Length: 342
Image 1: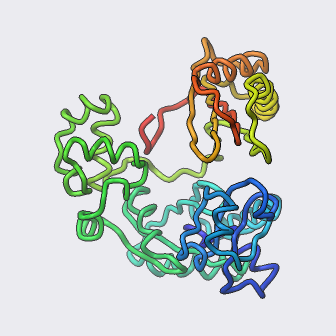
Image 2 (image 1 turned 180 degrees about the horizontal axis):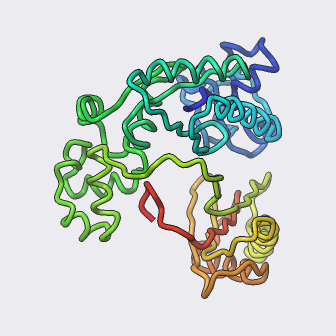
């Protein structure tokens, strides 16, 4: 189950006059300030505005768009209402985020169950969702993309290659642009080609776990079961976009320390040790890089998290002006990843 343009839909629900308009949500809603797009309406997406785009760029592309500030509390409340309605159907529900969940349904007519899910959520919240049907989480996840908006799509072994075979490898869940580029350098550019690849050969290039996982994913295979165990975040992060560039590196260091302390508070609230700290630096005008630092041992100590963040920052060699900084603490794993490579 994947809610359609969720954040925008919540805004439209309280301001119906926005329906069909070019709506962009991000930052404090002022496109003259620095910030990035959180999401955009389907109408705005068709004109080239997408998540992560600078708000100023979005304003240049669509000067007559409606810009709105991010309202996290409203989105969390709407998500809770959706999930409450979904769980009320009696299915096992695995939450994947504000706007997405897997639902375990054993049915000879899954489309009927999908319509039931859509109708229930619509009646309870006024929000539309798309439903993807598959024999496993991977198939169902990808199927939702073909069902949007507000539709139902079935993707199983029978039509897997018909639907996905000619598509690029990054059409698959868990395969990003960099991995797709590396596969292309090996002569593997489509899902069909990846499915036919030798897992042992890919293990030599991507590692003993990731190589075979790539081939398995291209074949539409996934052994992970849907579970209703509470979702646990893999980490916590904080970041800040600065209205004026920071060009003094000592200030960059102090900002990283500040962000690390905020992250440490989030970690303390969850009482889970951190194994790795990642620092994000976005140089002006818009070049983003990350560097990570593994900690000597998992810790919840704020000083240890801050030290890891500063060590990660030390791996950046450029001292160009900075427009955004971020710190993310990654929790020590308590079980292997289920679908994506570690």
